Length: 626
Image 1 (cartoon, rainbow, N blue to C red):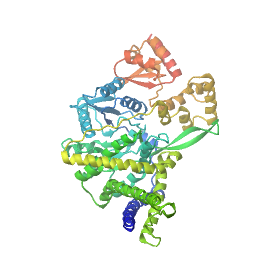
Image 2 (tube, helix red, strand yellow; image 1 turned 180 degrees about the vertical axis):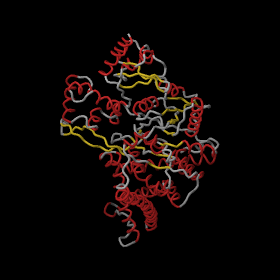
Image 3 (cartoon, rainbow, N blue to C red; image 1 turned 120 degrees about the vertical axis):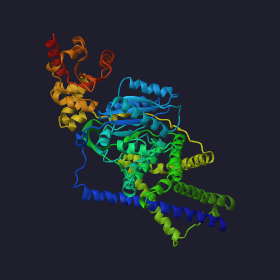
Image 4 (cartoon, rainbow, N blue to C red; image 1 turned 90 degrees about the vertical axis):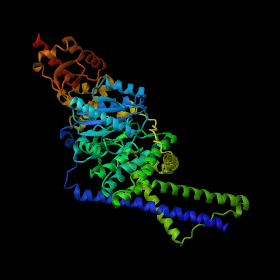
């Protein structure tokens, strides 16, 4: 029995010392983060005003190309594209989706959106898929180069997204503001909240909540770079062109499953700057209070500009996804990248690969717990209840006891930091659930490390290229998307065009009489059409115009018959960049969109105009042309 207790004691020594090393490592990052934040608040922010939404909107728009690699994404790609096109607060951008000849369903899904919006382009890879994400991205970039040559257009910024991403309306504005001063900008990635019972999906929220709001910021300062996350990542044209020259036009490394992670190191080799950008916007919302939610109050909320998406709900899918990350970052990164850079860079590479150590320690810790409890159970069975015992592995006066006390304090600190990290991106319920999910996350990571180790063994033994093993994706439903869309009432309150009392009254009238809130507000005299249109345009992500019927050329009036103009409340107002500009009182009305698509030239841009303004413009324009 003494030998058995000694074996258990060595298990405890290994786990205690290992947990101490990992705990102190995490403590260093935490202290660095909070000291840096305190310093910036005391000495930097008072001298330099914070970036505002107005600053973003004043910057002239550069051309942006969004690159989306897609294999077997027919279930989500059309919804993602439609949502991005409708809600992105940017005009000068186009979307290029990479597909494969043998993935007809995805190609048809992209083509269905391409028919409706000329900003969407489908790039077909020259070979069947799946290859891997890097290969698809390389062909997408090549397709963009051909498109620029054929059309004469120029893109100064290139942005990466995936087929299931929920793109923040301001993300392109942020890229436009910072690039090309910065070669690569990474926006935070925040998983969408799932029901509390979905523990597997919840572990992603827990990990990303800390990593993308704290760890990457410290990494940027210590290592001088951040790796790409594969989504919400923007690059300057100059950086991609230089990298293409250095790598024979192969921008993304096809020999790794984590081309986004690898890409950050390639930029660092060229002394290109990469940053994580955390930008928060303040929103005004009407929230319901009280036991029965009968009282409405005005509330200011902070919202981080981030890429949102669903992550796997089933453990099997999560293990497949995380094993690819571990295989690419830890094993392929170790073999291909080595340990480049100075001390700061090497330290963060160690943190990237620490998952092997932390997983091993978790195994030892769980095994030790099982063995100690097993020893007690066996002694109870063999010796009887009165003589059953727990092995005494450590005395209160030993160095091991002191290490265990420090480990306990570090674990408590780690738990608090996990809760705080989740609170930065979510609510209290999710933050509190992150504590029990830590154990579930350890089990998940253990399975992922085992699978990644097997993948590495096969990769080294056979030399085979590992194909793009896609994780099943989902896109938010319309109901879930509503929380990310600005409500008209909130926007009017935010712009100080309406009081809360008037908004509440208008909403009551709307419930009784029906109709649209904007029409009700104008009927009650709370806002004018001139005040409403710019705000409504901001909500719909569409330009709002005041139409002067006296200035419309006769040749444009002939494009839309007068009876059609009156029926659909539309009128052609001009031509810009080869596209016909048509003003409409209700641009989203299906009948209006169908008539415009069927009867006008292929390239049409709809703009918003007030209903009364359009009536007067149509009356004057066609009366003058008669």
